Amino acid sequence: MDMSLNPGNGLSHEALAGFVEATAVKLGVPGVAVGVWADGREGYACHGVTSVANPLPVDRDTVFVLGSVTKTYTATALMRLVDQGRVELEAPVRRYVPELALIDEGAAARITVSNLLNHTAGLDWGIIVDTGEGDDALAAYVAKMAGLELIGRPGERASYSQAGYNLAGRVVEKVTDLPYERAIASLVLEPLGLSNSFFAPAEVMTRRFAAGHDRGEGGTLSVARPWKHWRADNPGGGLASSVADQLRWARFHLGDGRAEGGERILPAELSRRMREPTVALRASSLGDALGIGWFLREVDGVRTAGHGGSANGQFAELLIAPERDFAVVAVSNAGPDEGLAFNRAVVRWALAHYLGAVDRDPEPLPYDGARAREIVGRYENDAMTLTIATDGAGLTIECGIRPEVRAAMDTELPPDLPPAAMGLLPGDTDEYIVTGGGLEGQRGFFTRDAGGAVVGIDLAGRLANRVPPIRE
Image 1 (cartoon, rainbow, N blue to C red):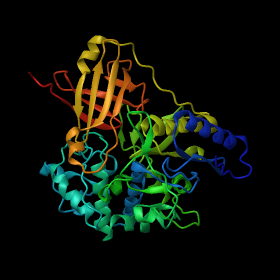
Image 2: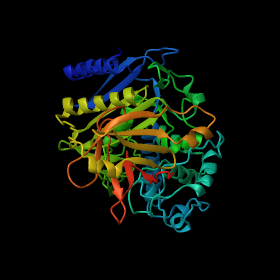
Image 3: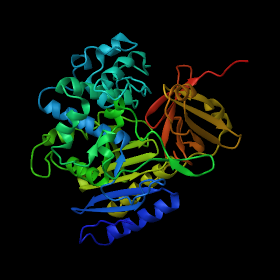
């Protein structure tokens, strides 16, 4: 156990270290790192190893893949470009990426930069495609968006989109005339002194870094490959960083837009604007609303802004409470049953222990066979398949990668999640909560057509449409 704590932080951070170790051991996570900013002081608690195959102790500087926490960096970089007068949030994306082509020409013309940053562009989740590691990777990805499905008109509703943020990264490239990674370094990483944050594996491999782990059919954890996704996914999920850098990043967003040395990075009003609601979220464990790059949520009276991230066998969580000058970051290197559960438990513990804010899940209703029959079936988006089933006494949800996507890839992909218990929530809103497995605590809702038939499901902010049953 590495417990890097500043003097004077008292029992709070000692208790954090004990909780982190006990929870990691209980869940069987190989390695974890946690950072907390509270009462004007920072504290760290680390446990375990970087890899079961080549173990090194995890410390505050160990580099983990952040997954979608990267989106907060892309959004912040774009806000710097807004401040410089080089980007307008309400401008059409085509002003900056004139070559953008989508299935719907009208949508391609209307989508704004703001739509990308708050997931209201109407784009499906994304495209699983490797366009190489050259500087043209993102441009090639955007070219392939011509085949991406749309889930609605721009501005109509929020639906989480990796493709939207990758397109936002292309806006950054076009405006700065730099590769995305170099632009983010110049706009964000270097000014804030985030010296242990990287996109390129060649930079990471000379530091201590964590490997992801997935659990096989026999229950044994093994190193997950590939280590991170291809370069075109960097704007939406490609940054690798340490928990110490993440806590510095959190403290920047708790402040007035200045770096620790006093340099103005963002005007205070733009920094605050990122945490103002732009669109409400329905029945989502991600938050009550979306700001610009942040999920906004009130927890037991405490207003928070946060973002989670997942990679292949790695999970990250970042949460700030600006009105309480508080932040917690957690990273872990195992699949959802272990790593996601660990991060969720640590964030909840920290909120309760430091702020007295208790995050409770709603209780589901007893099983209702008639309602169950309305929703059982298979649902798909461009990457995932969700299967809702019943055994006559309860409901389960199974989440997996679409077989044709898995078959088309020449690299290893994360395993599908086994069925987990779920239940409908009170009221006639078609809302539900997952009550077991790696997705425990995830909330969502079913959508109906004009005739009242269930035609879709939202999970983790993503829409999946119902697939008609095969007729014999």
